[in-house]
Amino acid sequence: MTSDGANNAEDNFAPLRRKKGKKGLLGLFIVVILGAGASYYWLNDDEDLVENQPLLTPVQIGDIENTIAATGSLKPFEIVEVGAQVSGQLLNLYVEAGDEVEEGQLLAEIYANQQEQRVESSRANLAGQEAQLESRSSALQLAQANADRQRRLMAADATSQLDFDNAMNQLAAAQANLTQAQRQIDQSRANLDIEEQELAFTRIVAPISGTVVSVNMTEGRTLNAVQQAPTILTIADLSQMTVEAEISEADISSLSNGMEVYFTTLGGGNRRWSSTLRQILPQPTITNNVVLYTGLFDIENEDSALLPEMTAQIYFVTSAARNVLTVPIGALTFLEGGPASAGSGFNEVMANAGGAQRWI
Image (cartoon, rainbow, N blue to C red; front, side, top):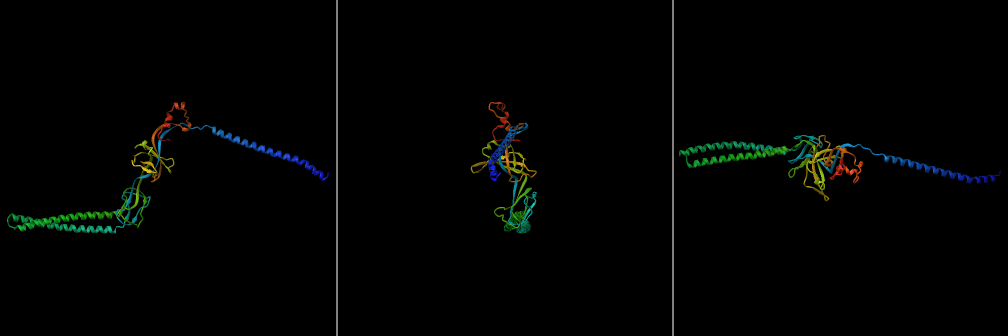
């Protein structure tokens, strides 16, 4: 066979190969489509099975509450700003923020040289006046004896009226001088007490037991207590805290003193603290035309888990059902006029107006 004949034979078979190639691609495409459809059906069928599975939960004994929610912050029940009552340089500061202190403990000292000198001067002045008092007391005794003698002589007509009058005048003057000396001593003693108090004020002691929450001054600083007592540090009793709740004016009519209240903190996890409402302050705060009243209640802080200025999420309990059967609200179907409404006692508890419902 010639080469031309071979080429013609190959040309005759080329369409046949192209037809077989197209059929192979078509078959592969069909297989892919069938596989995708099977996967989609299998996945959807599995989702339907998961969605159709019932959610089961047991009926339990628990509490149901109607609450009014509010936010607030924690404050120390007792807090004292310790200041300086005398001027001078802050010589020593013995505590730092976070230290625990006892009532009467020495916290700081102010340079007291001037106060000490005033005390010594007042004591010396008082001692001189007391010595002068003894002299005037002796002069009064002498004047009294002379006056008594002149009375006896005058009764016996043995002295002149002039001598008698002079004796009476000297007695009156001696009595006045003694009284004046006694008043000066009283005044000097009062001045000495003031000077000694000012000297004592140079030693700053703790007025209460608690924790030093802040220190405002440093050693070496000059304090000027002429117009206003400068605050050196602040002590707070953190064993008991007060929660200040911000209550909307729309909810204030539903609250009353003594009602149950509890709160949680951002860092407290699931822990909650319970108390009773102590007081609602009558003066509101108004911010951007929003009227908020302040509610106060106290809480023990024995483990020091609560700190000042913590944010509290507060719930005032307006009504509650304790130790009753509870189921999730999603498990109930409310049909108007149906069986659910016929036995609507539980529904009434769940739908009780007056605030959010809390599951315990």
